[in-house]
Amino acid sequence: MKKILSLRLFLVVSIFTGSILWTAAYTEPTSSIPSRENILSTSYGTPPTSPTSPLTPTALILPPTVFEVIPLSTMTFLYPDTLTLQPGVMIVPSGEIVQETPIPPNERPGWRKLAETDHFEFYAENGYFPAAIEDLQEQAEAAFEQVSAQLGLTVTEKIVLSFKRPDGSECPVRGLATPSNPPEIVIFADERTSPEQIFAVLSHESAHIIYLRNFPEASHGELSEGIATWAARESWGIWQGSASLEASVRDYIRDSTYLPLYENYDLQRAYNGANCLEYRDILYTEWASFVGYLIDQYGMEKFQELSTSAPPDETASSITFKPPDYEAVYGYSLNQLEAAWLAWLAEEE
Ligand SMILES: [Zn+2]
Image (cartoon, rainbow, N blue to C red; front, side):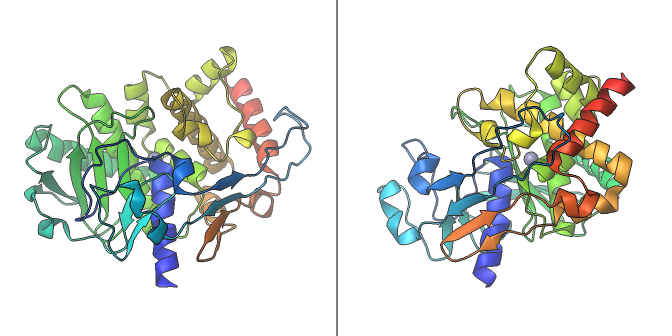
């Protein structure tokens, strides 16, 4: 049971971030990380095709997403030279490798603690820390205070913060949050990464940690990205050059780049393909504005209830993520709420 629970925890995180967790046994593979198809077979339910407009008042039933977990013993061929899989090390849907019980950072080879603040411990991995440590200490505390106030939540454990070099893959990860104990944030950056991006990623990942440490059973990736981006919307907007989440969504609608939420609740476009970053920014912004609308209209407690509704079905070989139970919490389906939010956006303009 413990294994399944912790597997779910890591699954949730990795889906949110499309990211990499490492272990003592892990060294960067020389070949590119295998595609998701090599890791496991995933079946996504067919999105509803009729009616096609989110503006329809007819409630739509959204299909679940099923991940089949392939036993690790079949995985060793993926990294024949570079990785020896250890007991308790798992490969999760996005192709990442996680360890059930993370090694404490101060016991990791090559890790060195640089500083500590009220909410963070800063580590350099093999001397890599592409930011001024004094500035970052201040920024991290500012980011934490900002998103903590937005969420009305906090965490007592200090967050371990480190950097990795920018992810050079076709669909790169920019930040990683792991709500383990201790919680961890990794920022993918180098000296050329803008301070705005580092601050926005730091804020967003801090929001993930704070929310998921308080609601570990929250399993819906789109809502997690929505609440994290919403809580960090100030720095997100500065990074993205946007006046507000709502202004961005209005631009998407005007430019016909809007992606219907009810067709994109699995966030697959955000994590796959050459245009994934563009889609990721659009979808995170849309979900953040939508989550903000739900909080504004119905309150934070209802959103928290939604985020923990419809927990996944888990077996040793598969995890079935079910869409959140919008109808039970709000009395409307996702597409109906999406329609109401879009109408509100149009009115507020
Ligand atoms: Zn995120």
